[in-house]
Length: 326
Ligand SMILES: Nc1nc2c(ncn2[C@@H]2O[C@H](COP(=O)(O)OP(=O)(O)OP(=O)(O)O)[C@@H](O)[C@H]2O)c(=O)[nH]1
Ligand SMILES: [Mg+2]
Image: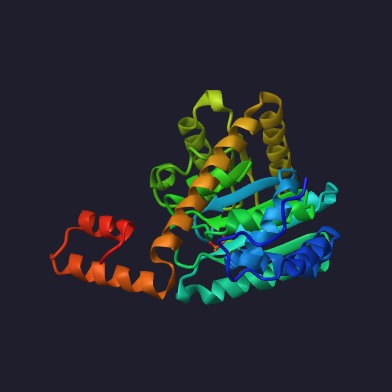
């Protein structure tokens, strides 16, 4: 089934669709440069990206998406790198999406990640993409799920998404990934108590990385005590820097994947995920309609000034924004 490739009516500036058709054609033929360009379009929210996605979407749903989340410096990038190599060993092609914090102070770290990840690109069956979070609240860039979809359509068997967990974001990662691996490390202050609320609930697999450091046993015991027995969340110990425990991690991910398939949970999860995606895009579209363009931004500025000056209350201002008028 192919989606119509003409520009949607509300895309006055849409590019000529033959360009997008050509890009999609090359991407589906396995052209990595076309893949890279399509991802850039999607990431930047360009009409080309949406048009490409409309054509590609029917071909998605085959990749197994694994989220790798956890505190900053837990070893997520090192683990992702090792896991990618392990998946290749198992004969699977891999896409990696590394979501970097967009803080201007962390450019060193971003560069560090990029360089390390670059080693992987000598393998043509591993495709690595770094994305900035662009100051969105939460650890996920707004277009991450679309970037994953493009990699999926390209034919990647496995997509690994690395993201820094900071409160709400784990839930976001979990809503996008088939399997969520939460990475924790020993010696993190008060142990399990210090972990951000919600992080353990979203874990399909718990990874104690830096298991070479003291305190790994105590952490494992604490985790066992707080994870409900009936959910069977496996706890895997790894030393990512040495590649230890990576096979076990890949096994645990495979086991979860199989469990999703045999229990029928995969369909339920997919439906819930689709609902979230439709709602997120609808919200985005509505906002674009309301405050897209210079006029809209100006109206928002005026209304905000009135609210700040206590001339208007926020509800009335929102109503005016939606209904028109300033
Ligand atoms: N001792 C020990 N150090 C590790 C291990 N895994 C990673 N590290 C080190 O921990 C540091 C952080 O590793 P990264 O892989 O960059 O961690 P990260 O979670 O991706 O970091 P951010 O993306 O910046 O949040 C590096 O210095 C790694 O060498 C491990 O298993 N044991
Ligand atoms: Mg990292």
